[in-house]
Length: 309
Image (cartoon, rainbow, N blue to C red; front, side, top):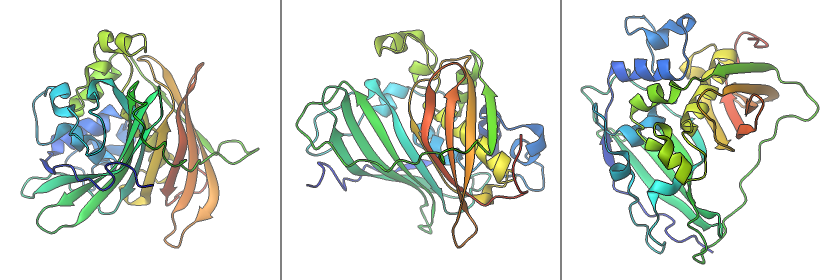
């Protein structure tokens, strides 16, 4: 049975960014001075970190702070009950990189085009909305990145919709130690820096929404952990070269609190496609706590032999 709303296209919207936005993003996800091409606009190989477009559906064309709740107000999907976007969390994101991202959109016109893949009723826990979004050059029609993502609308299920398909699971290789680990120490201010990219969800700055949603207070952006893990994978295995990452995906398994230390364990599988991209698997855990990112998978052109931190 086809899911309600499948194929429904949301209104497209313009997006833009400056070199300053690229520098801020790289800083906020942990780029270091040995990756100066992400942090210095005069570097001869200055580049945008490849996952940067994941922020554009929040930012649009704004350089100023925006009302997150007003912007996030869900567009009604035909055949689906009205959903409250104030009670939603990320489910999973898979990003595919098709063309290098220009260091600025100035002088060009970009937009994000999105459509519904499916809407799934998970009963009392909530509803999942799965979408596909593309960053497109409006004039040429060229697609730079695509993102398949899901949002989980907490406590908004039980309306009689389909449960949805079971997503594939990408577990680490059994009985094998990680080929590398990558550690990120967050601070109480980490989310306040990351939100300046354009994701101004109060959940990551004000304890009140987190208490109301049952998290006990402020939590980190799920996409901070996702982007920080992408940074670690590309740095350790792809030589910090954006051209060496083809796909990146992970499932948001549990919240991260400001001040938590994150450890990403990464495994090589040895499975290489015809263009030289190897499938890597990874898991991101909170030290002393739960798994934060599961189902981690990336396609990376591995350089420099066995990566070590």
